[in-house]
Length: 401
Image 1 (cartoon, rainbow, N blue to C red):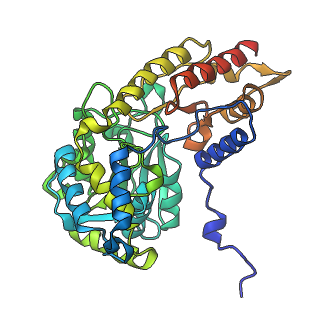
Image 2: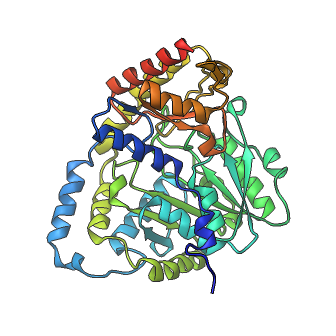
């Protein structure tokens, strides 16, 4: 019998740095610490009332007190298919849709269904912290493809080619990006689709921030440029969390070719059965609503984006790109890291994040969490006043170095 109490695959799993730092920030706030947190990757709005009312009605309906199909409620799968066709340019049969417990579960299910031991997955970096961890859990090998501020945090087919091997099976594509806010244009998306098609790669396209964009209705979808052959290797993951301020409701989905969708259903039937019926009914109401129902959130994020980028750009030693989507900025702090604090060089963005938390009472996520040392991720999903206060604290701390 193995002496291990905890399985090796779990021992080797890294905890989500974003959730860990956000938990620390919330704990400090609960203790009364005067803290400004840019750590949370979730809208600061309440879920719209019409969605909450749909959930209340659903909770009263005995139909929702029992198991439902593992793939999700038929009504929800239908509205997801229709909405995906509108936004991503793909005809989707409802049978291709599998409802999951949030977007993270959707990514997990896709990886577990598609990857065998040793399969390599191209992941443009900086990347959301969960991607490489889930690839490893599925037996795959994450292959980071580095980008930086000079390339607007985007990959090209030429760059991806350098990281391809005979074991490469998949490309993870995310636009808009967490943590950078980068959005691929039509031309860039088409080039990546052609590359994946030519290489015979599967593509998992994470579209969770698709409708949170600036200067455009939604981000161009790689599926709009996919050949018929590529659509048979294209998997979309999405959810209601970001667009509708429903992070706590835990409703996401996988959209995949029929055989892959059946594999995801098989996994889910053994893993968690179905997603909460009340949450699914709430998601139906959200997705069936007119886009104007949540326009106030986009307007607020656009205003906050203007504020946070302008304030950060005014700090000596910080270089920042205008994000085109999501609600994050990802500034370079290389010019700050060479400075000293109490006689010692700061040296790393991880150390800078620690110092900001301890001495400025500001929570940010260090770039190391996203495989991008030298940067910080700041969410602007907080109040306008909080942004001004928090960036002011960062400016004061940096000025004193």
